[in-house]
Image 1 (cartoon, rainbow, N blue to C red):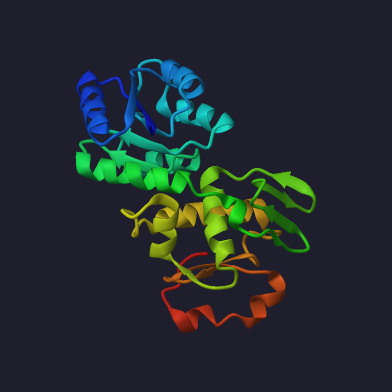
Image 2: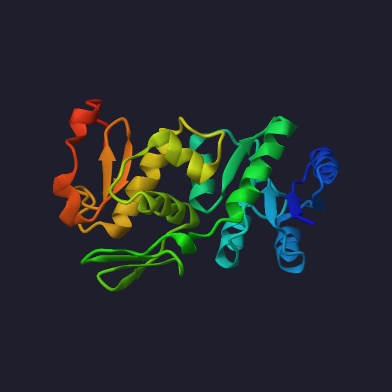
Length: 245
């Protein structure tokens, strides 16, 4: 049976989650604090985690950070924090999805199903991407620039993996958002800009003049090898909106 670990200090929400998860055939594991969540991660090996950020002992973001040190389990943040900065921080620390309270149970359960599907996918099917300076080994989640190891977050790996699957071809914003965060996403272009800039700082020789991760203004992104960039269509011929790279 698929195990789902629910972490929330609100007893009513936790009881509702437990009932709804069980009714849909999942095995719910419910805890009220961050330390118990980290213990259950080891003891119960859940297939997915639903994590509140406002916990009584540890901040949920710190719990998420500790989870990502040892596990790639899908994590859906369930929080009353609505600020875009909180969402970006949680996603950057490796959350797979972010749901704000109050929430609809059917929508949350749809995101659970989506998270479990994505959790079953693997980067190992993506072929390595190599240039004179950068190597991305998706099977080992190992990246280097000029021979020096580079740390990419789980979300950054998913973004470059989606772009590498379509190497050289345009991946539109909505398709990229849905592939990384699920079907309910499609308009959060600020997420993509944040992660594109982070990836460029880590992989590009000159992030201000990217040669690998190319923005097609107002449309989407491409991952290209520098030698093939001259073959790309003019970005402004596609869309003249002038999106900042």
